[in-house]
View 1 (cartoon, rainbow, N blue to C red):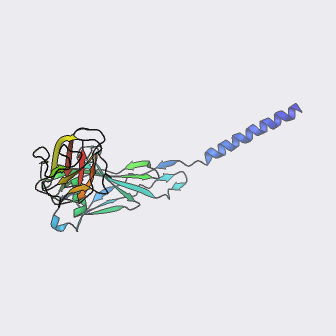
View 2 (view 1 turned 135 degrees about the vertical axis):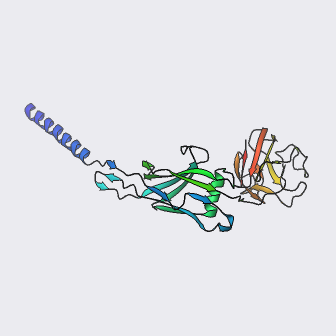
View 3 (view 1 turned 30 degrees about the horizontal axis):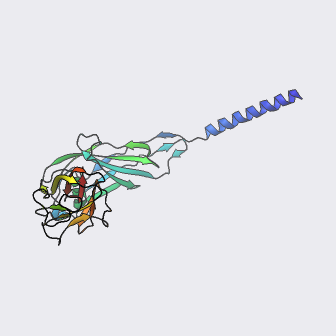
Length: 269
């Protein structure tokens, strides 16, 4: 009886061993992929506002052809176009990324690419070198492979989300002057720095509200947050003409408020 028990035990071990081997044999592994080859129809561009709806240039790239132990992958490949300032190794704060699903090309209109360049805080009417590459991956950012890097040069033009006012004033319960309008100047008048940017440093009352006025003493025009009153991110968000009251950060202290009409965004630091 003991001999029979030993034989059954050994048989069970052998069976498990064979099962484990079989399981390992059925595992699927990535064997290879080919970095996408990236090309562009143009590498030097002078963007013109009068041609804003026309194509600026097209990027084309090849499929990386992921290969597995079972053969060529049938999974959809995802791509991200990465554009950064030249020499930044695609790690600067100016980096722009455009998600692409399955397609092997992307055509930018003049306005679309100029808007992207503006988000990178690149000065208009200045030829600026940029680096472009494509990131390819499967599923949830797995098996990442990068294309070659293209060097392009672009000259953008001044374009704004909203017309730039001549002046800007801050009013509201978050400010020292409260909701009294006109506001005290120059303490609550923003300074225009550059052609599209306004800034001011002043104490703000935490958790209170404010608006921006282009004409001191006049409620007829204002800039506020995109949604209803106090619906914004207090540290920075989009703004619009006629918007709701802007919520200040929770802590009362001195902040620097900056509005950029090129992007339609404000920051509070």
